[in-house]
Structures are given as C-alpha cells and as structure tokens.
Length: 332
Image 1: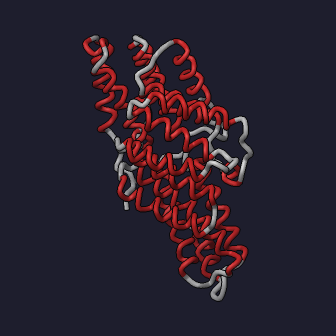
Image 2 (image 1 turned 90 degrees about the vertical axis):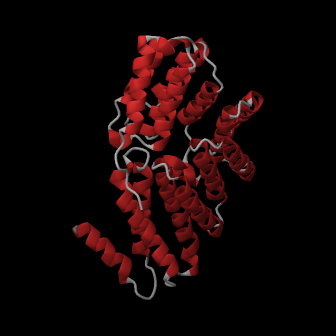
Image 3 (image 1 turned 60 degrees about the horizontal axis):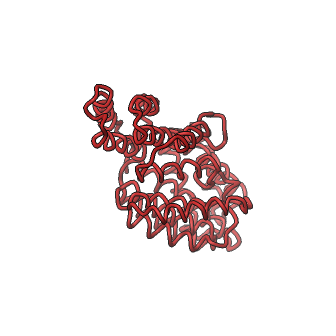
C-alpha cells in the first residue's frame, strides 16, 4: 500500500509537466509487466496492468508532456495496450481484444515504431486464429509480414509463423512449407532490436519458432518419427522455468502439439502422456489458447481409431472436464 501511494504521488506531483522520475517509474512498470505476463496467470497481473495502462493514457491526455517525451509515451501505450488486448484474448473475449489491439496500433503509429506496428498486425492475426477464423488470421499475418519484411528483429519471424499456422488450419500445405522455409532462412539473419531486448511477448525465440513450426504440421494432420522428435524438442525448449523465454502457455501448447502428433502417428498412449501436464494445470492457468489446444486433441481423438479404446474414451472425458472447469477470469 505504501509503494502504491508513493507511485500515485509521483505520477501526480508534476502539475505543470511530466518529470523524468515519472517516466522512469513507468519504464520499470512496463518492464515488470512484460516480463511477468507469459509467466504468471492473468488474475495476478490484471489490476496492475490496467492501472499502469490508465496512468500512461492520463499522461498522454493531460497536456503536460513535452514533445520530446511523446514518442516514448506512445510506445509505452502501444506495449501496454498490446498486453491488455492479449489478456482479453486469454479471457476468450475477441471483440474487446481486437478493440484494444486497434488502440495499440494507433499508439504504435504515433510512436512511429515500425516494429510495434507490425506486432499489432500479429496480434490481429492471433486473435482470430484462436477464434477459429483462419482466413482473417492469414490476412493480418500476411499484411504484418509485408510491414516487417525489412526489419531485422524477430517480429517478422513471428508473423511468418502466424501465417504458416493459419494456412495449416486452412489445409494449405504448400503455403505452410514455403513460409516456414522463409522463416528458417531469416532466422540466420536476425539482429536483435529494442523489442527483443524488451522480451516476453515482444520477442520470438528459437524455441517458439520451433513450437509454431510443429503446430502447423500437427494442424495438417501429420505424424511420423521425425515430427515426434521435433515436437519433443519443442516441449524440452520450454521445460526450464528459469529460462528467460519460458512461458506456461507456450509449454502447454507445445505439449498439446506433441499429443496431436503422437495421435496422428498411431500412439494414443503417448498422446495421453504428452497432454497429461496440461490437464493437470491449475484452473488459473487455463486460458483460451490452452483450452483450444486441448480441445484440438479431443477433436483428433473423435476421428481416430483410438476413439473407442479405453484410453481414448478416458482422455476425451478428461479434456471435456478440463475445458469447463475454468476460473472466473478477470473481466472489465
């Protein structure tokens, strides 16, 4: 409470203009929230995220910002709006998520930051991807990939990964192959930028690129020994919580993909073992993406020869229970 009161004092202390201490405070908060977002359940962060978001926009609207500070504040507004939008998407509220993404895009343009502009197109792709609107997902991923074509950081790779995954949902195997090869080639040419230094959802590590590549193959219905090895490697890449690139959502997604690929390979017992850690997640971690990923395994079971086996029936029942036993995630 004392720290919160001191922050409120500092944010309101400069009546005529915004001081450097205020901007430094917001820098610290943005860094903390970006780092924590992939690692903590949304309920833990939501109040602080909305408060910091509100503080930035009050400063922008208050007329106390020097012209030299505007670009930096708009960049903070874009970053925080991006996180709020992702939070709404995790709550399975795509309309609010898309609205906040448009706010993030407007701030990114005012900040004149090409990387953030491209990132918002990526989020516009991610939202319909999880809402089962792959055509929209591919449209925004393609547009963002064009925007990021000349950027040297990893945002362009993320957009290619999003494009490949949406193409896989559409059954477009040729596009999946072409785009994933482009992403593989570009990985060798990456030069880390300010977004990579920010980390969290604003960087696209090699582990995540592998996870997206495997997911596209899983969505195409493929399964063989080589793919199983890649899927296991993707899971291993997210298995160390002390790694800076660790994210509980990415780990759960990679585990669901491994389950799918083992199922496509005719190994229902291996599929059940792969998804077990996901089904054991506490309710606070069962965000929209994780639930959709688990339900894909259930759908694949329905069309698998294993659907009538005891393992298949039990697993389907567990996934159904998993998808309905979720917490009242924060809203509003």
